[in-house]
Length: 272
Image (cartoon, rainbow, N blue to C red; front, side, top):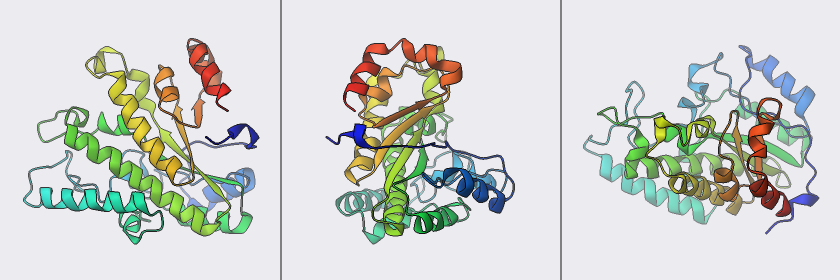
């Protein structure tokens, strides 16, 4: 296990920016976050940069223009078999060309190419990327009958593995820009603040934890740090026990919520 206590982090930014101009957004990143650059989600530049939509390219069952995941088209099982083969190849080799098949294209992230230029220029110790969290995505997307994708084991597995591939693609590109930069991949999970409420009363914590653990292990196996962000109240024992390296919260509004899990936090800090 890596001793994270020896790693010195500086100011870290989370997620989206409100800019409608990419040059101004990236100027802010360069001016304020050159130590740990990040690529902002700019939904006002392109609606495809919404955190839910942004990571759906090349996911089996997803079609642009449909408001549900379609598993009934003729080639679905053929596409699914190829997808699982691609996933195994990507896990075995971070430099595999198959990872590029699951890129976040410029039509879904205008800022990523500029982010890579900042890494090449400043060669920072760390660089921050992100994916939408698997629980948030699986409880937002629905199947043809309007049923939450989380309750379909096949769709849930597709979502976890698609997000893992999106993370690997970011890690591959960050490392290509500067091999010495350590990627930090954040799992953005606003919806875990609803875990345990009446909205998701039938969802077990173990199922959610297993999703986080799988994605986190893929990230760490590729030489990156894994992190989880939740901007509201949540049961922090779930992300902490999933094996992530970093947890991030709105400490101004929800520090008291974190204090409810002091023993989990203590164990987490003692691991470095």
